[in-house]
Length: 534
Image (tube, rainbow, N blue to C red; front, side, top):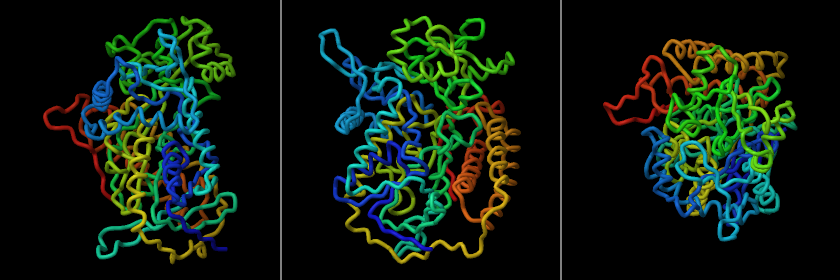
């Protein structure tokens, strides 16, 4: 059975970046399809707790936000991109308010109602706009509601992209243009042919490459792998951010404890209640995430302990329950009352700072293919993303991409004559255990060898295992019908290889990449991005 459909714009991913772009395009009478690998709420945006950084406080400034971002990025941020992004913070929040997002407010000393601002690690001021401790959920649900109401947007859940479809550009066989994608409808076990004049990757990051992650299970680097196989350059994949505080509990492996909790006075302590962050950075608990994560990792390995603790019990119960209702309730389900006792925490893979290289309009190396959100490497984050800059990046670059697409779309012809997906030489698998086994093996050795602290030997060991897995997965992929699990595994092993290759290339410690073989930052030459070409 064959199936094909044509759209103006095909957006792969239903998080904040994808839905923002869909709404901005649809308002211009552009026909848009939004693909979600699982439910629309399976994106990382939905699970984001902290908030969105933007300058609203009179004592704050754009220049200060820029300075903090550049400092966190350890010399690899693009200053022009940082300024572009930060300067659109306020307008981005105002657009979300127009979409119905409800943010937490407070009364100022004059009695006027204003946005409540949190402070998080790396920020010198309070500038994090939030909706209690479930900002991503508030943003996601509002955007989904707006998208469902829009006649020009088709929302397709449980659709996984198998491969992008490209063709040579007219008059230049060396350059490619994207014309659509082969897409697996997992409910019908049917690979559909979807053509589009423009395709946008908004698939999020690749943090499920690690056994411990704060991300939903959908974060398997699909967009990065799709773009790489299609011919796009990828950059800075060595900079995988580990969030310092993930709840340590056997039944809550990926529950994040928001950085805002530390911003409101939460202290990192050992089992005996003693603090330790002052030994690593004068900013203590509010140091950038790479520093805090390495400090926790150091204490755990030095002392042979399973976790450290995050304690905010010195605050009043009313304050805690008002500011952190989600964290309070979730911890209570595991018999942890955060108003009375500290929270056991460990670092976990959280954010992919590298990704598909884009310009300041979210354009990739392939004509008519864009990348927005965590899948992209825009130059904003450099070697370490500052807290709450991620949702801001989603909003700003969705806006930038929409401007470029609206301008160019009338001159892009649609290509509808594309052959259907060929399954004539494959069969249903009777060895699904191979997929689950390889998945677990990959994530375990990535955690052990390519985690918070690295060495040349560990990276070499990881690469040897990746090569073996790549061959096994390729053979499996060539013989059996595709499934969602197989597609994720195939993408994840590519992303793992890209992370390792980038890490092997960088002979210094910088930002999120820390290696015992080169523990110092090399300041003898200007810092360089790590860029890989297919």
